[in-house]
Image 1 (cartoon, rainbow, N blue to C red):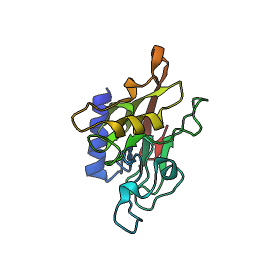
Image 2: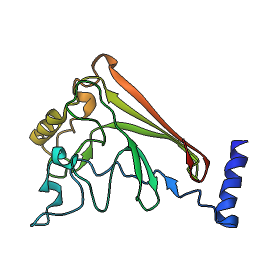
Image 3: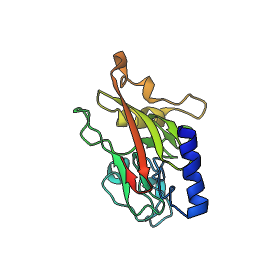
Amino acid sequence: MTILAEKRRLGEITELGRPWRLWGPYLSERQWGTVREDYSNDGNAWNYFTHDQARSRAYKWGEDGIAGISDDQQRLCFSIALWNYKDPILKERLFGLTNSEGNHGEDVKEYYFYLDNTPTHSYMKYLYKYPQSFFPYDDLVQTNGRRSRTDLDYELVDTSAFANNRYFDVEIEFAKADVNDIL
């Protein structure tokens, strides 16, 4: 039944011009650490401001968020915000290392999975693993900074963030009953 419904929606795009793809998973989660919008004087966008500074800014060309959706022009963006009562900030974006912080270049230090998505984005499902303890931002930056290119990356699972399997499985689902009817 759902395959037939999705086939019908795909047909409506081409035959009727119905904008089923207007809303979808177009919001990036890959602008971690800092952003690729360069406001620096020397062309070094990655080191222009820190993750702490990046989370407090609005961006002209690209927003990011965990399991976010937006319209196809990113005029309106939605994503989740989480707080585990331990972190000093809301968790609104994925954390990762910039090129100069990681021993193997830029690297996201989170665990998230795209579980399902239809071609029209009428249904989308995402899983994010959020530690119940303090998120080890500084530990990840400092430990990876001490490692050489021949060393393995220091990952979130290598910290105590998931000790005793203490984390939240945050499942995010979006469904559209119609092109602009999002739940």
